[in-house]
Amino acid sequence: MNTTTVAIHSFPVSDVPILDARSVKADYGHLLVLTEDGTFHGINLDTGEASSLFRISLPELPGGDEGSYFGAPAFRLHASADGRFAAVVVDRGRTGIVVDMASGKLTMHLDGGDYHEHTVPFSAGFTRFQGRNVLIHRTAWNRLDAADPATGESLTSRDIAVYEAGGERPDHYLDYFHGQLRLSPDGSRLFDDGWVWHPVSVPRIWSVSDWLRSNPWESEDGPSIVDFPIREDWNIPACWIDDRHVALWGLSEWDEDEFEEVAKGPGVQILDAESKERASPERWPMDLNGGKIRELFSDGQRLYIADESGTTAWDIASRSQVSAWPNFLTHIFDAERGMLFAIKSTAISGLRLPCASGKEGRLVK
Image 1 (cartoon, rainbow, N blue to C red):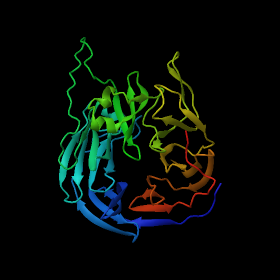
Image 2 (cartoon, helix red, strand yellow):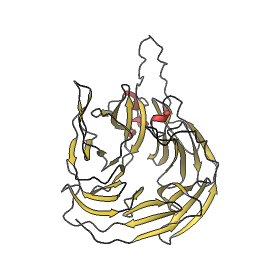
Image 3 (cartoon, rainbow, N blue to C red):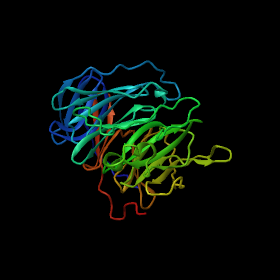
């Protein structure tokens, strides 16, 4: 395992605690940061300078218990890759806003509905399609829509009849609570960490390209949807490894007869977007006991795992741990710059990754 010491750089933002941050490629910098007073800041990683952009009124944060099973409501920041648009949403809540970063104006008010919204992060994410920015967002517990973030114009208009009690199930009706959304690196696919009643988790992957290009019901019952084996819990750390594979934390196995998990353990399952329905994912056990896993990231060669004790790096080809950075809890990953970032109250800490060795390779299936 590589134990080479790496330099950690601090990028002070302001005197106000940071709520969230995202990696972008914008005129104002390489990191977009939101602080508790509603101010957006840009950080230029080449110069180390932070600039205050403008201030907004944050959505109302509903009350909640941090000690509850799902956690208290909290703000989350999403941003388009070019940094032109940002969305501030309330995880485990129902509201959000979209901001044009060029003008500072609000372009959309988001509402994800009030049915068990406390059980999931607010489903949202930016992608690009045919040269334009697109915002995907939840508009009801069982419905996603795509919109032009500049105008709010819907790009996925469709009609689905109301499911009346005792009546027949309408065409395209979806009995699924959308969860946290993760877009593939090329933006063509979406991983949805949602759930269904018992309640149990049903992770699924489907084609955003087909949804936006030809079938507005692709997110409900389109042919590209792949559902993976049931799990007891959702809101699980996950990341895309490449444009086809997702790493999902936890080695759970589901017993259909007993309708329960019969095995657990540290490690990841590799989900294949091109696999057959309910195909068993590839399992990768790990000797890792650093505490609760917070985030997963990947550059296609390595898997980066952030837990309560720090961050570790694992080579995907050899299935071995190659590096560890104690006390560095990664929150943001910029694969292009090869940097991990952690939020430290009023500053961002950045760690530049050492170069990968020639023995390491990409996942090949």
